[in-house]
Length: 616
Image 1 (cartoon, one colour):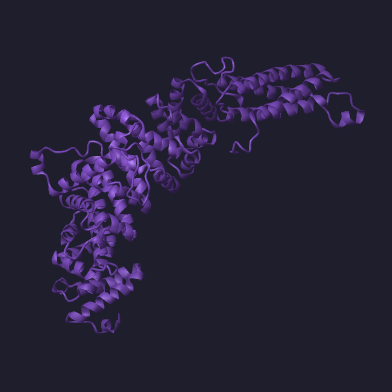
Image 2 (cartoon, rainbow, N blue to C red; image 1 turned 90 degrees about the vertical axis):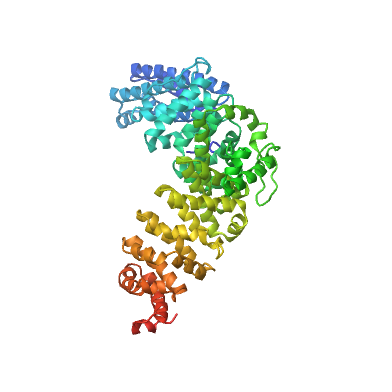
């Protein structure tokens, strides 16, 4: 699809077929053979000429014209007029030789006549879609099948719906958007056609209709359906959709914010460029604000006395967060700075307009908004250190920790996934790790408390896996004395679900691996929590369990090889067996296993002479 800058003005596009029609009519009047056929062609061309002139007048009076079907139809009309002109010109007086070379028959006229009738049908359809008779004031969606779309009816429906969304009455625009969403849900081809035929700009325009929440919801729903693939997300970004989406998210009723937050999530999921653009437009700030709405209510003294320590810490920190933002008016956020101007939506002239509506909304509506906001934060943080940093700088960690503590189901899961992505980013970036997960940080403590609670108390694979991964990602932040995180992980090595057990082994590897400065202390703690017998059982559970169990056993042997628990559990025999089985499929582990065997041979009797040849 050519950009508008490269295309001719629509008036210029229409002038060419009008000129062609005049030439055909003049040639038909000069014809000396097949006069009746030429006259009939002239009549058809006259009808086309009148329609084209009406269309020109209509296009100049419409402010926001949907041009895509006009260009397609006019291009086809021009081709058919060129064929008619070529045929009619053959009927002028010519020499005998040229007549023999250019033989014309009634069949040729029949073909051209059919083509012209198709063009007349296309023009009728186009004038109906553009509502030229009523200057665009008629209501309803014009739906019929033009000849140009006879082989692909979907494109005519898409044209009609987009034209209505762009130029119709508000109620019709809403209906057309809902129909577009229904078409797009059917298959990816319909999504592709909607984008290629210029559907994004009018949908973004509809999304800005702040006077009609129904219109905004309809537009957000279509955009959400379209945004499940990178190229289509990029189309929304290229049309400057990200600032519009962020503005609507911050300045709308809850029922509008719900689909808009979902749209942010799916765009961030499918395109890294969109992820970065949302960050630049400060979308994280309103998402955290919406997520924290009614989450941190001041408890009465009686309730306060019964609260856990980490709940008290969370509430106090969020009180600071709310007070710093409540006097501000928008989201002008300066990255890498503690200065936030115009911060909190709840007190802003925009967000404040909807505060009372939000307070009076049904609980299920409030929960759904939080679910979508948590999902958006999760997918914005995924693979992004900068977005993860922004979330931690907006006190987002405290909010996520509180919701993990108090909520259940999808909201709790989305919050855990957001924490998992933030901790994964912290694992890969030492600056973020030190800034957001300091040992004396209330937010970090609140998150750790909730992760451990999920691991220990909740019997749910879906929740335990992200919690275990999060703790593993933070392995390098824990001091040697912080053994409370190791015990629950060790216990999960015996989990009846192998996925949880393997994730626990992977997390413990990050405590015991050489990259961790405190690997020797952590290795001893793992052994003290009775980790070795559990690992010996785990390595007999399957290939993946054996692989990660053996790696962890190797780390324990290397960093705590003199511990009697390793000898009592016959770890040396297990590693020698692994040297033959596991290393065969994972040759990159050969050096690690050999080093572990050598280390055990140094401390325990009954060593195999050939193993003592290894030199670290």
